[in-house]
Amino acid sequence: IGGVRSGMGYCGVKNIKELQEKTKFVQITSAGLRESHPHDIIITKEAPNYGIEQG
Image (cartoon, rainbow, N blue to C red; front, side):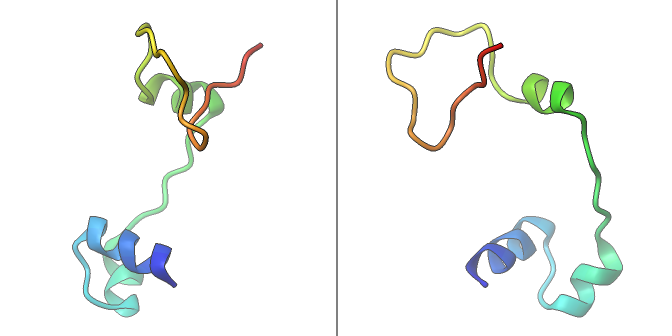
């Protein structure tokens, strides 16, 4: 439930009803996901929960 509550905060809604009425789910491609993350930078140590798939 913590993830839902956090997402509600990002969307600026106070309850589930507002979440259903005021938000829109947008699905993006894997290429879009890669491009939306920082790239072309040198990271000395990858975070354990945030990696880039090689391939």
